[in-house]
Image 1 (cartoon, rainbow, N blue to C red):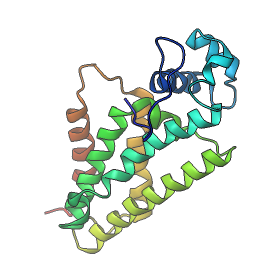
Image 2: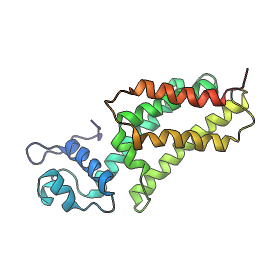
Image 3: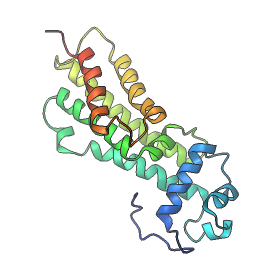
Amino acid sequence: MPSTGTTAKRGRPGYDQQSVLLIAVDVFNRHGYDATSMGILAENLGISKSAIYHHVPSKGDLLKLALDHALGGLEAILEQPQATTGSADARLAFVLRETISVLVERLPFVTLLLRLRGNTEVERNALERRRTFDHKVAALISAARDEGSLRQDIDPRTVTRLLFGTINSIVEWYRPGGSLSPEKLADDVITMAFNGLHVPS
């Protein structure tokens, strides 16, 4: 359950801010944020539109809470000791594995992040934070290439796009609770990526 950093407001019985947020994220993902009105949210929650305002001031505040939850998980990865010390190769593997872990753990929230169009200030700020994260991972790829851990014959920009494309696609097909565990998923992605990137022996 996402933490908002503040005490959740209490509204109608059976709902708090976090449970409203979970349902709102599901609705945003099904209908698209722009197409989701407060009326649609109220219908899915089974409460009146005015009751939603007991929990959050606006639809945009729900979006910000959801995106902060997704981005906070990703940004925290880069602050871990395993992401800041050791070889660039080991740091890259750690960051990619943890990114997959966050994606699976916060799947609806990351799905919403990846589908943003940048039509509002909240969305543009979130997209800028995501770009910053992506650039830091891209820098790790370049560092691993420069230290000789990764192949020199593949453009690092191509590597970056392919890795992000592979990881981001998980939100479209992965189903938690199925036969493929999050750990095995991460193992498979890392194995596929690094077997193709490591310098041939």
